[in-house]
Length: 527
Image (cartoon, rainbow, N blue to C red; front, side):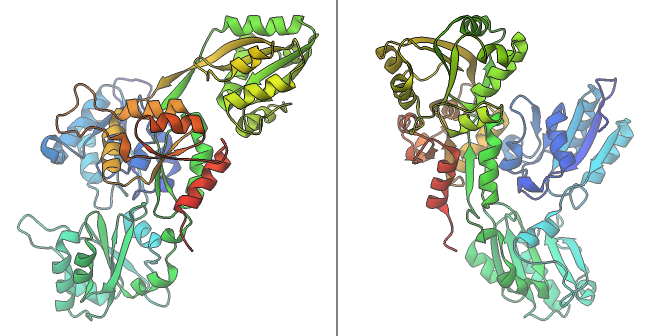
């Protein structure tokens, strides 16, 4: 992908973000999110997709303005030109496809006039994706051979500029975007033009997201059924015989965790495994790391400890308390130009311990298989197991976070073992300024089923990220932790969450497998 490297003028990518489900992002748009200098995005970009944006990325929200009014189209175009003229690579992120009633063409015209280079990146349009997630194919050889996308947005005078007679004659599937407020006029217009009032029809709200709802009826009854269901925006209206297939072909809401949405808080480098498992089960996942890790570098303390390891005799234990610690340990070996053979093949007999299965797997991926993993995955049990297993006089080298659990070391000292506790990395809190207001609103509305926590630090990090700060708008409601159902990986994590008044449930053991198993038990569909 060609990128401008801070030349006199930048470049704009006009990209579609799809209808809401993060997994419907194109590969190119996902890469642009990571590589752009500034992202200009709309209000309908889902929280799931916004959570992909790195917390330190420059963002401009043009979906809301003072008084909750949309930013005028002319101002959006000026923003794109202004940022590109600073030499920045600008990603203009729009819902759906930017050229399907997205006014993308107008924005490109302004870029052409300003001499700004650009590319257009198509997105998956809601006119096809939303029906698909509702079990409605827009074409089917036994029902229709065409589909037609129409804007249902009324003009300023309240009228519709739609040739209903031509649409009825097409005998195809009709997809009306932005038409909920004009639903009655649309349906009456079709019937007045000769359409059978018994023609199947549907309205689909928040399609492809955890909030997806489907109302199926007929052209003559859809308005009343939609009103009874309280259907609002965003939603699309479908008219055609294919709508009758929804009862037979629906699938999205039938998945084990279909219709569920979870907020994940663990560090981004550890997020993918848990997020992937939940998505496979049908859940929507917002990835909002509450903490990040920074390696302590240069780490002379680690170097000295490992060199001493090489010189000593007897039994020596190398102890890991997290999978992140494993990764950082090997990164620092490379930085210190230390060979793992020098560490393990000295005069001492080196044994390895891991706090749990995930840490053990991280070690195994490096060709190291732990000699000891406690039956209960927490620092206190690790300390007790080591104290019981290690030979008298053993030296214990713990490599972990700068502020590790205080429960690990006392059992070792009580057993008369020598202990050296070497910090590999420090934990820092994330902020996500462009996402925090959206998350607070979703929590207040009950739109997030649960928040996963994998350590006490992720609990503290989320509260710090979401709590009201000096300089926030007076209209912004205070964050209320008591609204959170905390899905905790272990007892210490749950205690931290309970300290803020969160409602907690705890996995049977401190592992991702057990956490997913617990989530399925609580939230699964009765299929």
